[in-house]
Length: 452
Image 1 (cartoon, one colour):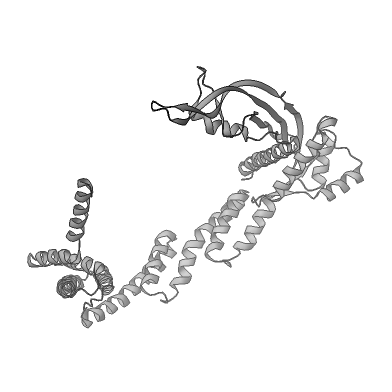
Image 2: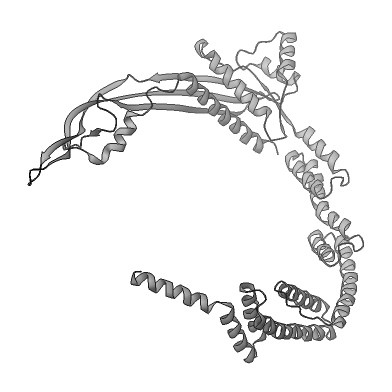
């Protein structure tokens, strides 16, 4: 073994020994003799975690740990005599938590029965005070303070009085009142959110459910989507984009955005004998008849597919082979050699571009509420090599003309690269999916701010 490895091993063994159960127990004894019971008990505890049942550590922890408990008992009794009930309860909680922790290493520490009885008395008296305090805070409409008080009551006694029900009131009432205020201000989204918070605390709180539904009904922003405009050759693009946006809006998670049923809209149009070519006043009338607050329309401003000309260039390379040579002793051996060759590098690219416009027009004022022009692009390119040289034996040349021995993996990648561009139909589908997603998000973002 190398000297450095030996030193590391020795250091590791030394560290393990210093933190082993024997060393920790010895350190605990030293601390206990020095009157540092809490620190000593911690050393014994760590020793027992490393070696459960270690006798010396268990004896030490029983002694030092009980000393820690006795100190807490003294503090508890003093707080009780001084009338500091809350402090006494906190000390008892710390004491029992410490005792329970030591129980995990099978060391039982004792808390006098008289202390436990005093604690129960304190709890009863404290609960009465807290209950009176919580009711007063509710009457004063200090809901945050009341909620904190009732949480403390429940922590001490989960079944005490009507603490659970009053905690619900303390948490739900502020949200309920906020909802009522916002509903009166016609801030429907804010009202809906507030009532939803109230119902999280109590699914049947007052009339919050009915008011939540009212906020949603009165604030819901229904859209009617018209056909998107385009040049005749791009009609299918316009139809697919419109359908994509419509389907995405149908699945929106925003409860305030709704769509007018297309069948209903078409029936109304037929009855009124109105045209939806362009955004005229009659479109607004149709929207009003269909119960829509706005009409969403769009247009394909540009759609192009640009496929580059395939390019082929001849590149210099080298073919690896083995040749026989004789060494100084006249013996024949094989050595690597490289012969100049050429290979062909092929490249081609394709770009699909879609530029579109979305408009949201109010059926109440005929004003354009929202207008957005956006462009999405999908690009693909291929680059591959062909050669008569057997794969694995072809190497590229450096700019200096020398063989690039480290370029084998690069050449392998080019020889095995994809040789066909992604179909234009697939690129179109990707483009329309992205445009639909982006367009829907733009409409949702606008309505998220527009609907109060």
